[in-house]
Image (cartoon, rainbow, N blue to C red; front, side, top):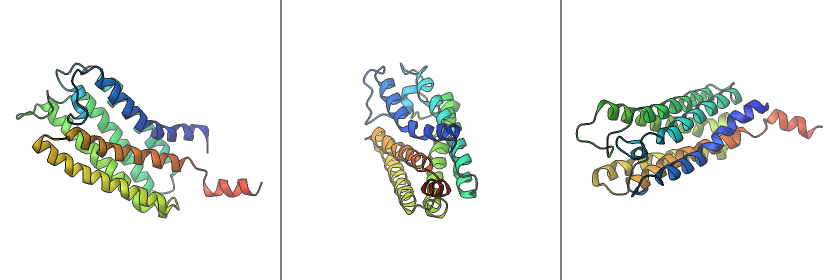
Length: 216
């Protein structure tokens, strides 16, 4: 595998750490911010003390990392339509991540009468969830069929189930106001861990390369 391709795929390994550190670092400048109760979007909400630079530290860099990783996936698995479809979904996720950063949510992120910016923020957030969940669902099938790894398929299924289950908990939490932040982090955490797992597997030598190494 070329060094350039490896660098693209390594972007997928960076994403979980960047997300974790970026959110934690930003929250330090937001007095009283509660990771268990508050949405990550509130760090960039209108009127938040971190409104200006939260997207610069979180949404936009992550959008770039997702875009580069999608490119790496497309190059690594170019012979599979399923894999190329998943790469397109990861790219869409990256673009939607930029969208959620560009269009800030209203103060508190849950107004009775949402502004246009809030509505677009919510739309891009929905695209983010659907795109990465669908991408991982494709690998539940492609794990064995494309990569020859049943374990990758099982891992993808586990991440999809976790994402869907925590999305349901997020919806409930949005109604009763309890632990929304926790469930959102578990939801997105499952998705970015899946990205890192796929990146790690994609960095492995191909079967042809392993055979060539074994015979030299």
